[in-house]
Length: 355
Image 1 (spheres, helix red, strand yellow):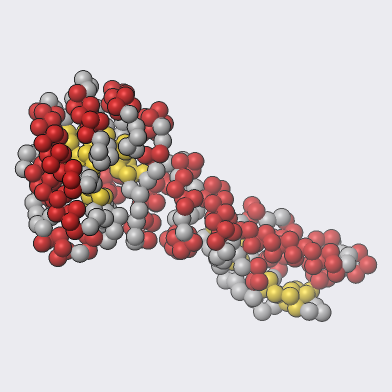
Image 2 (tube, rainbow, N blue to C red):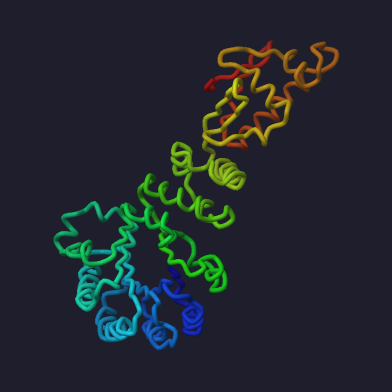
């Protein structure tokens, strides 16, 4: 689904329509842009296209919407086109009543080619009494292809079948970039989730569908979401890119993730992410030698780094500097640097790790 901003011109819309392959979904913000909507219906290449109309319009525009757009929608359908209505449900009750009036009027004229998409940016689907009061979902599930954003229960299967794809920032791309990335496959666009598990499910599909450079929205994850994704094991699917983002976000948000050292399997992780490639050979050896509640002496560290336990071959300052660099590195990788504890007069120990 292509969703572009209101400032885009009629020329942009016509160009987008004319270059689409059959079956492409076109997304269009409605507010105050009825002329832009009309230009779609006037396009010569709209046959077999899927038209998306954003119903999140101001109440005062409802009458204009019905009188101006509905006849054109009917004409569009009779010519073999398909229509999708996109609705943002995070609106106040007054706007919803007007919106329902418009959507009810449209649905009476539609057949099974009419696809209705709910863009829930709040947990409104859980408020069943409110929805039932307005008879909002009545007849929709049985008579219309229904993609419920609030639960995403049907979306994974559709994604797997490659019938639709899912993105969150597609509307920021230029027309050329949109066409290049989508290749005519319908896309659903979502910009906000309230449920971490729901978001995690969607990100899992995004990670599998897109290259790492396309998952730009991961840069905007909150620290809480990052922690949730670690628990879900979602941040290990795209390699170094995801790892880089974790370092950046963790560093900026001052959160710490668990340092896990497995000497037997020769693995060192921060959260669910391996950091082996981010450590020097000395740093890895030092961490593998550290054990919970077990102290490692400066002599042992010197032997690891310099091959000698003789005090004449190293200084306490040099050893402390090695540990300081290791702590800084762990901080940048998202771990708590205090996990390496200084034992005055002896050396160091590890406060917390899983063997």
